[in-house]
Length: 440
Image: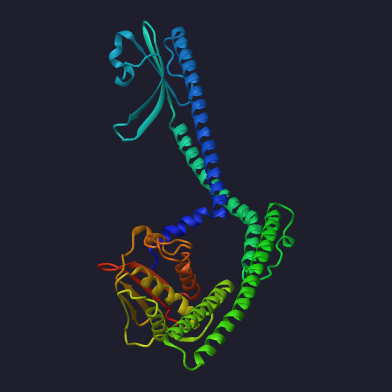
């Protein structure tokens, strides 16, 4: 089921699309333009009609009055749809109630026929002289009907032209956006290639062609940067492995000699662990620079035991207990170097910032928890902990450049793992490294 948040985000993305903006612009333009034309047409028609009918009624009423004065015995008015009546001022009780208080001029009245219940709409011209009052009524029912028909026709035309504008907008948007969509398709198709195909050759020398040319230039410069970065990483990895191999061989040779005192042996073992740590870090960084996943069946328990043993020799009398909990077997499809770097940074931080108490490494079904009894985690640390170069509020007197957890985050992104660091229930910090289901 689609959540309301996802539906709202999809609706916002649709509104931001250039194609939808073009179509919407045509629809709004067509609707507003036709609505203005229709409104203007109705206004002008009503205005002209009112002026024409009013002028005709006043003129005919004057003709009616003058004809009456010339021949008082004349009956009726020789005009179609017009009813003329005159009343003597001595018999004003015969004047209809609706007409009696009207002033000279033209008025619009609505009456209901008591017999049929139908409404009658008419214009009434009024002329009140000293001896006679003259009324000329003009039935405008047909005009009102034609006006309603015109209004319906105009509303239909607004809808029609709005729909036509939408179709024109859709067609125009398709024509306008076709080169942009083609550019996006070609750009997306070349995303996985180390040497992308030039784009500008597929487009004319217009705005889209200029954009394609700019993208080609940017892609070329970016490819050069990536290539130099890969070559640099490969060269550094190769050049560092050689002296590390020399160190490893020398340490193994010295450890194989009989009669070495315990202090010298401890120092040689520490050098050996540091050499292995450097080798693992170089391998992990090389995987990150190439953005490629390595494979292997790594026993997480064995890696955790080796890391804890290495840190026990470096405590230097610190009252800190390091222990491993959890009895299950956890094997991950990843190189041992990647597990070593990711888990080693979490354990190293816990040991570094915990002055006394304990550091517990707990194995779960698909994750590893590193729990310490250190000073805890501030709000600022929680927000910026995985930023490159950020050192926590408790790192004033500790060594390091603040890139360890940044490397862990990048490894997790590469392998689809998840790392989370939260304050403990009472004190300290709980760091959780969760492996993907497919790797365990």
